[in-house]
Amino acid sequence: MTPILRRLTAALTLAVVGVTGWSLSGGMVQAQNLFSPQIHVNDQAITGYELQQRARLLTLFRAPGDPQRLAREQLIEERIKLDAARTSGLVLEDDMVRAGMEEFAGRANMTADQLIAALGQSGVSQESFREFVRAGITWRELTRARFAARVSVSEDDLERATRALTGGAAVRVLLSEIILPVTSLEDAETKQALAASIAESASEGAFAEAARRYSAAPSAGRGGRMNWVALSELPAGLRPIVLGLAPGEVSDPLPLDGALALFYMRDIEETTVPTPEYSAIEYAAYYIPGGRSEAALQRAAQVGAAVDTCDDLYGVAYGQPPEVLERGSKAPEEIPQDIAMALASLDPGESSTSVTRANGQTLVFLMLCGRSPKVDGEAPSVEDLSNFIRNQRIESFANGYLEQLRAEARIVEK
Image: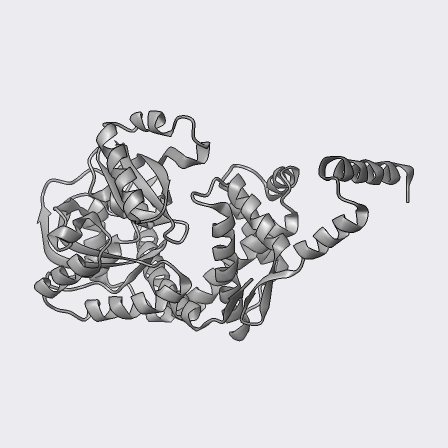
C-alpha cells in the first residue's frame, strides 16, 4: 500500500468512526447488509446498494415523488425488462451502451465522461449510471424488434397527422375519459382486466356509467365528459391514438404513471383556422402525501381555493422541503404523458388533481401557468412524421407488453 493510499484509508476510517461511532467490524456488517438482496424479481436480486444508488441518482435528476419508492419501482421494472430481453436472446454490445450514455449526457450538453464525473462527486458510481442506461436501451431495442413489424403508417395517417399537427387546418376533439388508478403491482392485473372490459363497450352511456363508478379524474361526476380540446394541446403520444378513433369508438387502455386511461370519441371537428402550436408549456406541481385519500383531496381543495396563479403556490409551499413544489417550462414532448393530458384541458391559472405519483401515494396539485406559441416553426418531413407515428404506436404496444410481464413476474420484497 502506498503512503498516499494509507493516509487516505486512515482518513476515511477516522471519518467513519468519528461520525457514526461504529467499530470497524460494525462497519463491515453494515456493508454486508448493504449488498444483501432486498428484492427478488423472478430469479434476479436487487441489493440495498443498488436501491441506494438509484435513489441518489433520481434525487440528482430531480425526479418527482419519493426517490426511495421510485427507485424500488424502477429497479423492479428494469429486472422484468432485462429478463424478457434475455429470454429473447438480446444482449447489448458495450459500444451501444456507451453510445447511449453519450446520448443521455448530451441532453444536458455534457459528454458521458463529464456526467460520470459529476455523478461520482455526488456519490453515484459509473456502473450504476451505466446499468440505468443499459436497461433503457435494452427495452427500446427489444420492443422495436418485437413490435415494429406490426406497425404500419398509411398515406391517410400521414395526411391526417400533417393537417392536425402542422397547420392548414385545426382539428379539435370531443372526448370522454376514464382514469383508473393503479395502486400496486398486484392491482395492475385487476385494472387491466377492468380496462379491457370497458374498452369493449360500444355505448357512450355504458362508458359514462363506468366513468362515474371507477374513474379518478375530476370529470367522473360528468360521466367522464371533457370539453372540446384542440388536438395540438393533447400530449404528443396521445394524438396518434385519438386520430385513429372514429366517433363512437373507445381507445385501447393507455398505461400512464400509476394509472390506466381510456378515451371515448364523442365527436371530431376540422376547421380552416389553424390552432397554435406551442414551443413550451409552463406548469407547477405541488405534491401532497396521501394519494387520493380524503385528507389529501381536502388539502388539494384548500390549496385550490387559496391560489389564483402559479406564483401563489410559493406561499403555499413556504417552509416545506423544496421538493414539494416543482415549477418549470418544458417543450410539449418533454412533459410526462399523464401530466400533459391533464394540462390539455386547462387554461392558465386552472388546476387539476387527476395525477398521482409514487405509485399512487402522492397526489399532484397541477396548475397551468402558461403556454408559449411556436414562431417560424418548420413542418416536419414525411420521414420524421412517419417515424413519430410509428414510434408512438410501438410505445403503446410496449406499455401493454410490460403490464403483461409485470402481472406474470414473481416479485418478493423484504
